[in-house]
Image (cartoon, rainbow, N blue to C red; front, side, top):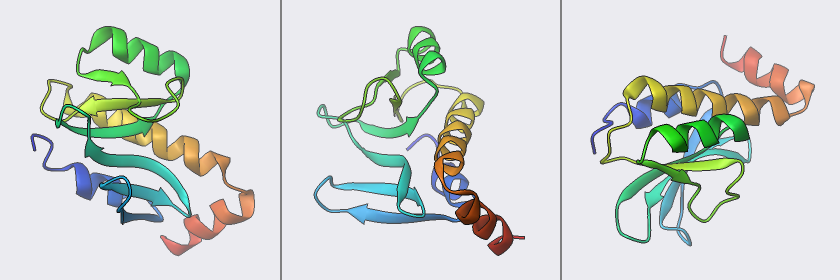
Length: 121
């Protein structure tokens, strides 16, 4: 895999955990019980990371990078998949992961957000 930093980067997020979803044959990056990333394979066998993005940003990314496609097996408006053997710059992929984490974090109750913040200080 080209992005050797990916796993460490996702797990460096406050409260992030990783599990394996056997039915999907994929690893998930979770915040509480909500997924902010999925590491698996596209139907063509290529390794992908799927993350959540603001819809307008996701469209912009897909227009600029052929290695970013609508989320594989996910809601195509909110999720995007990145081919990990492609040419998406590291900083762009990190920004996508950051956005996905923030979208999930902000969807949590304020109480849960505070618990996550307090645990990791």
